[in-house]
Amino acid sequence: MIRIHQIKCEPGHFPGAEDIAKKLHCLPSEVEHFEIERESIDARHGEVTMIYTVLAKVRSEERYMHLRDVQRGFRYAYSLKEAVSDERPVVAGFGPAGMSAALILAESGLRPIVIERGKSVEERAVDVQRFFEHGILDPASNVQYGEGGAGTFSDGKLTTRIKDPRVHKLLEEFVEAGADKAILYQAMPHLGTDKLQQIVRNIRQKIVRLGGEVRFSCTLEHLLTENGRLRGAVTDQGIIPCRHLVLCLGHSAADTYRNLFSQNIAMEQKDFAAGVRVEHPQEMIDRNQYGIYAGHPALGAAPYRLTHRASDGRGVYSFCMCPGGIVIPASTEDGALVVNGMSYAARDGRNANSAILVQVHTADFDRGHPLDGFIFQQELETRAYREGFRAPSQNIADYLHHQATDTLCIPSSYPLGNVPEEMHALFPAAIGTALEEGFRAFDKQIPGFIDRGIMVGMESRSSSPVRLRRTETGESVSLAGLYPCGEGAGYAGGIVSSGVDGIKQAENVIEDILNGQ
Image 1 (tube, one colour):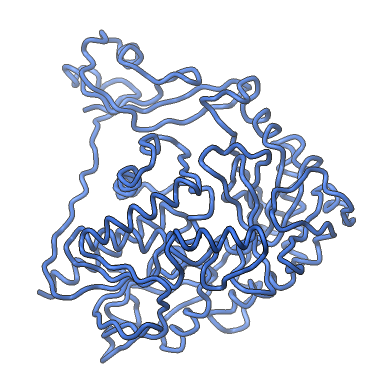
Image 2 (spheres, helix red, strand yellow):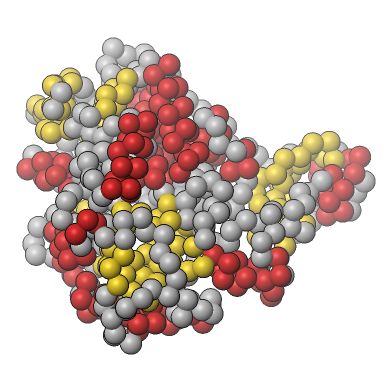
């Protein structure tokens, strides 16, 4: 097969044999088979063009290899090694990293045991809905904790900048579990929280069919070790003997990280980010991004991606942008507020929302302990808490003038109520100033970003403030058999990169088991 880039179509049209033949300067009959590998949108210069890359089987392929947009094509073949062992490895945490690791281990015949401190997605959805409607928080079952991890109640974005061929394996598993096949080629694929909940459940059922086991409401408390080697996992449901444990805790399990630190598991501070959610009318974003094509059914609600470098060198950027979505409470404990963004598959909400984050450097919170970042997060979230988990909010224009907001310029989607106020008091001065600079820069790219935008805080859980140190083969530098993994361990940043890291760590476990036989 050959890979053909830069096939351009109007919105709503997919490439066909005629388009490929035109690109290759051949007859359509010479195109025997093709599949779309990638779709992207070019919305520059006030026009919208769909750009495709395809893999095609054509007659006499060598004739076309000199063309600029043609390459030799290949499809990564995922090679799974089968391991025969009486040992059952443990996976701690059942977010994207844990699910992927458990699936690979199950497909290899190792019958993994998964422990997850939260509940199944079916039970979790009930707890989360109760929180959204009534502000009643379950500290063990919420937006952060439970089957599928924090991504289950988000936009379900599958965008990533990593080029690892395992990405395709991960996306194929999502498709098998019920996702639209279009995610295999879309440039900015998403699942939506409603679809993602069913996909998560289907992946769990596949793991169980393959001999795996998932234990919900089961929290890792301690590790059993002997002579520098893992011997078991101590949970609140009992001891699980094991020689391999893939640690996929997520970015919010500060209590478990403290327990691991007490056992001398090597970890270090790392930079993270903090800021707010902003909301704007989705129709404003659509018009800015797509011009006359705004509202075209083939395009859907428009996303955006914004970056700025503040005068002190800090990055200010959009993150987890949710077209047509809602802002949600994402706290894990009473007395502290965290917000996040979520959208359904249709992305048909009135507002667009996105995190606008500022880099938080270790120097901002370093007090001499590897877990100081969690303390800094806690301080921010406690400062932002309002009774009933109402969210401090402000018009962006008012924020720039350092004046309190009386009435929000657009209705917020946040379900538990907003408290209009002056939000500079929530942040250290450096973060607050960087936000101001970012807003002014973003208004030049999206006119109306200031005058038609509101801020909702606090957004502080976009990434982990700690990294668990590991070797080139994925093991903890402190304990043989322990494999730190995913976003919480400091090695990923989103559903796809976390899932890929889970696959890698499962492969590392399989290799270690095979080498020990």
